[in-house]
Amino acid sequence: MTSETLVTFADGTVRGVRTGDLITWRGIPFAAPPVGALRFRAPHPVEPWSGERDATRFGNAAPQHPRMLVTSRDNRVVADEDCLTLNVVAPAGHSHAARPVLVFIHGGAYTMGTTAMSVYGGGSLVRRGDVVYVSVNYRLGALGFLDATEFSTPERPFDTNLGLRDQVAALQWVQRNIAAFGGDPSNVTVFGESAGGTSVTTLMTTPAAAGLFARGIAQSPAPGLVGDADRARRAARTFVELLGGADADAAAALSAASPADLGRAGARLPRVTPGGYAFGPVVDGDFLPVDPAAAFGDGSAHRVPLIIGTNLREGELFTRVLDALPTNERRIERMFAAVDPGARDRVVAAYPGYPAGRAAVDLGGDVTFWYPSVQIAQAHARYAPTYAYRLDYAPRLLHWLGVGATHAVDLLTVFAQADEPMGKVFTAAGGRRGLRTVSESMQRHWLGFARGGEPLPSWPRYDDVDRATMIFDVPSRVEHDPGRDRRLAWEGYRGFATTPALTSTP
Image (tube, rainbow, N blue to C red):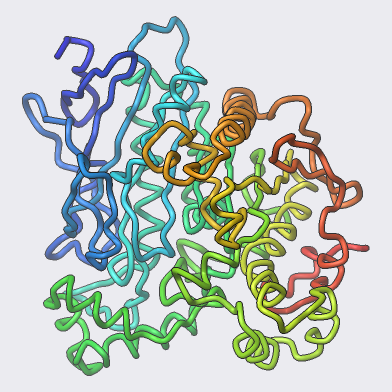
């Protein structure tokens, strides 16, 4: 240990670890433990400490199913309600100027994940970009996204959007304290993948997040994971019934249940969001006052630069690992019948071969990830610099398995995993050089964006006329309006948003 690993900020002093050219601080609390009376409550300020706090180990993961708690062998963590911590990675070398800050929000359908996963280490971004990297834990599942406000009592109040509030609290911590770690609080980029990408687009429409970040990067967001208040309240009533409590004693049941009991009730809860999941942010009229789609459409979203994009075959992963999306004929037909029957024929016509497997899978991935991202890009581009991308690259093994550039492949590229254990597995059949090439390209664009609000000059801005989209592959290229036929088929579909401002002319 050297003196360089000690950092003092508002809450106290933390002791990190220096490894080569990086210094890492882990498990720093950014809010009070949300336990006891603070369960189901908005995050409270952390209690300052005296002396040095050991920041060499990851904090607890949020409660989740044990089989979902996947970390590397040397980064074992436990799940516990006391989980509101973050990690900071910074260059060991001195800098005369404050460094740009990248804040990462992990994915996992708002029910699983932890910053301790080795892929989220962030070291390659720090080395290549001379930046400070922050990764954030937040509450998941019922503890993070159950809207139990209907059961509030004067003695036992409940708050909404707890996981989203946690993310805002973490960004507030960054504003207060990141300068002590060499970061520039006025130059913060928040980025995330999957549920983390949806968190980015949601934070861009959350009033409490205004001014907390200068720009955002949304990787494979699923904006349909944002639910409405009525649906959330119905889900909460069902959840309490599954938990074994009646309305009269719901507050007591929710307060007394173990995390495992809450997890079991959540696993049995009907999938209530348009994206097919039980939990996610809720338009509560308060902390999240309007649907993010509407906010992007009318320009009330925070007008910060945005990178947004998806992977070529998002849906394929969900037919093999997380079987929840409309990726087969039965679910697709039910989706159209329930949401927008009139759109069915024109949409399926844009997927030749439907209902054959690949066409159905691509349709489900497009309605969940790609088309909502196109809608957000074309809306936000009217008010702030916007850059759209699609990741087409995948290692040879993924093509052999028939999944290609599916959901989460961008984690291999953005976090430069070619020479890490995970990357070596996925490139065992070849493609490691290609993965390095695409990783370097994506990282340079991400880092240029984080430093000055623009990616490299080879990536033009998006608008709803040219629709310039960066295609990351070997080689990468710019295409205009990729997937045009599918986009036009989805225009006007009422499953994601009915806000007129989100639609466009052909």
